[in-house]
Image 1 (spheres, rainbow, N blue to C red):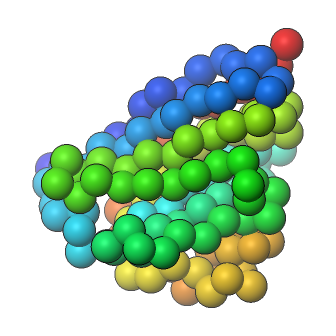
Image 2: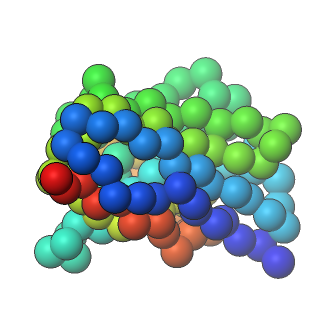
Length: 131
């Protein structure tokens, strides 16, 4: 079965850190770019980060740049999002997806997804940042 399953979401205090994971099954992760998205409490969706197939290049939305780090392990069919200095506004349902290419930097910078060409989407893991 072709699927992506996220895990690791939790309740975290402001300023804290959390690492969430994305497990791929039923297909080879190495052939796709991987991106993390989030759905905010107001149901708005935005792209957070994207990493190229070989992991050499990654990009981030301005809202998380310098605080979040995306990574992947093609051998383990896994992708990760390390989140540091978390803020209440980071509260969201985080989900991963695989696609043809990362959105252009100018698009991803503002949380856009144009150009990604999503092929498989996970169902998400909840991250809540609150004291």
